[in-house]
Amino acid sequence: MCLSVPAAIAQGPGAPPQASSQFPIASDVRVAGDARQTRFVLDLDRKVELRAFTLADPYRVVVDLPQVTFQLRDGAGDTKRGLIKAFRYGLVMAGGSRLVFDLSGPAKIEKAHVVDAANGQPARLVLELGAVDRTTFVQQLSAESRPQLRPAISPVTPVETTAATPAALNANAATGGAKPDNRPVIVIDPGHGGIDHGTEAASGELEKTLVLDFAKGLRDRIEKSGKYRVVMTRSDDTFVPLGERVKIARNQTAALFVSIHADALPRGDSSAQGATIYTLSERASDAEAERLAELENKADAIAGYNLTEEPTDVADILIELTQRETKTFSNRFARMLMSEMRGVARMHKHPLKSAGFKVLKAPDVPSVLLELGYVSNKDDLRLLVSESWRSRTVGSVAQAVEAFLGKRVVNATGN
Image 1 (tube, helix red, strand yellow):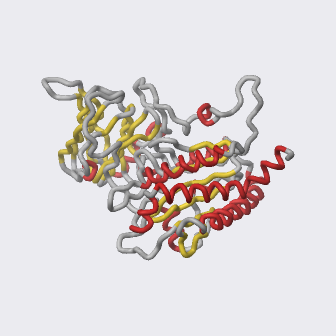
Image 2: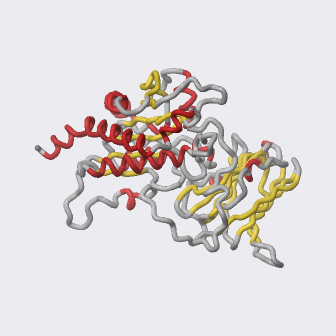
Image 3: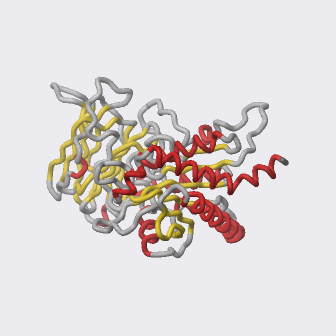
């Protein structure tokens, strides 16, 4: 979960420069100007195409690029000057990177282009912003200004991923005349990713990395049984919008959806510790659950993703009955998960909670959100980075999955 959004989000901050890269390399950044006009310059090792647009509430400018390897100095995104309060950068999908600028007020994009290398200077991305009033800003927003995430404009070979496309998600399904794979599908959802790195420990560990490591271990453990097919919403450091995570589960007709996270407490608050299991409820079980849901549901804004609600594709007359049954199954799995984890992992003093997490809103897929612990708590963090703890806890979650779905598998196979 994300208590505050660190401005600099890079693919390996502080990493040493590489001699060569499959992708363009961004090596330095400069910001100049004032509250009327501001200029942003990004040094690149080659020319790329870009697409820039604005978003409102809050005021933001988004620049989409082909996949870029960012090798900027630590804290580069903390730059505050003129119209730019801060900026973030990172991978938003295979083949595509993104820059997101938080603005101090409404502005228009006066120029957005990449100039060729010349006179000993590298290729440079140049973004020039000019202050405007609110009315002018809103008038420049159009459907064109709110694109859905898609591959970069430039012809780039996307990296291999199992999260983004139906073809990848069905990689294990039968092809040709082979027998269909009717095993129950479990969708594992490592939270955050790419430009959104979630919480960050004081010692530098990132939530997006911790939960991905745990999710991969859980996937491997579940797949060993051969009883289930596992789908990951992301299997690498890629940003996946919340709505897309839900769609993946629904498109797969998943039997279970498990979202993995690691929380952090507000500064100065160290009273909570241990793992917590959340289910969906429009009314939060307590103030902390409400805080987490509110923060998590803003994750899409971090990547400049359009936050307009997608229309439901389920007939209204069926939604209430379906959701009621799904909620019952979700709560049942949550209790089983708590029972299994208690034997091996430290649990929160109130381990079962509920709130309105968007990622749990598939009306027909039992879903839980598992907070492994608090990266802001030293004892929890020590466990989160421990391979031994991860192995034991992964085993307990896999056992809960078996307890929840095992009977269904037996009934389906007629054994």
